[in-house]
Image: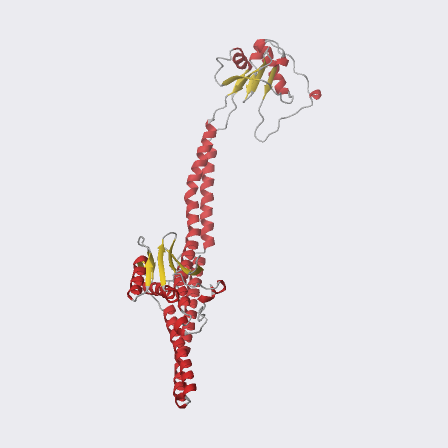
Length: 442
């Protein structure tokens, strides 16, 4: 353990203890249910009650429903059905063939079948009074065939029994009791994952974003430390590369200056050509140093109105005599580096004015902030749409730095947009021209 690092319990142990506490609560509730619930008891009826409901269908006994059906399908024979049918037929004074009794099977239980030849036949009951005293346990359906061929059916009305309500309430209580443990467990899992997602998003928008706080279990703290180390290494790598390029560009000015001195005594034609090449190389080195300086500069990000920023760029271009317009709209507030974003918009507007003479700027709000800079110039070939963002690539083929530039403007603009978590794309406009689309996160 490193110096200054406090001891942290592992995430596995924390999750295990919470799950164990959750299981303990559930088991305590089940133990309470074991002592609180009463065993369910089957309801008892008599054949006399069923016969009474058959005779008076308009006023059945309590707990019975009487209705007519067109057909009845008997169950497979068994002794209980035969005994009950014979008792009901005796109580009603009808032939046993006119009575059908059905007992619903239990949950996930098949109806029993019997080989009747191996079971003694149920003897007839001694009297109607004895038949009426036969007890029926549990739910059933009893049907009597009427002279018109229909069937009058008496069935039990099974309401929700108290013990079922108690179990249902107990299950709801168990879910409510366990919910806080599940919530805490989900929070424990989701919080560090959300923190890493937010940190990765911040790193994509701003490489200089503050590191993640080393908080939570040992595994999370170790992962956060590794993430912070990775961010620091990335920043050092980028800084080292930028410093190296800037140093090379700066040091090359000295030999170029010596070359300029050595050609002073050369023939006029050769001296003029060499001086032109030297000036071009010096301009390229200056552009490289400016590009490195702009892309590696640590800008202060703050809340800003993107429309006001665009208005400033448009006004400055108009003051210089350029034909630049800005579409009307509402304020568009984002968080960013105002200096870098202003340079990006000015770069795009400058390109449109340079190659087309005019520029049309518009802003659009939505899930992302969108800036469009459109012109009616010659456009660019489709194969160069992505290549123009490469450093030192110039879509203008004359290689004249006065018309085509150094080829670093769009590379710098895209670097600024991507440093803010956005991007820049170019599209050829229908009817001619080019449109630059900048997307920035809200």
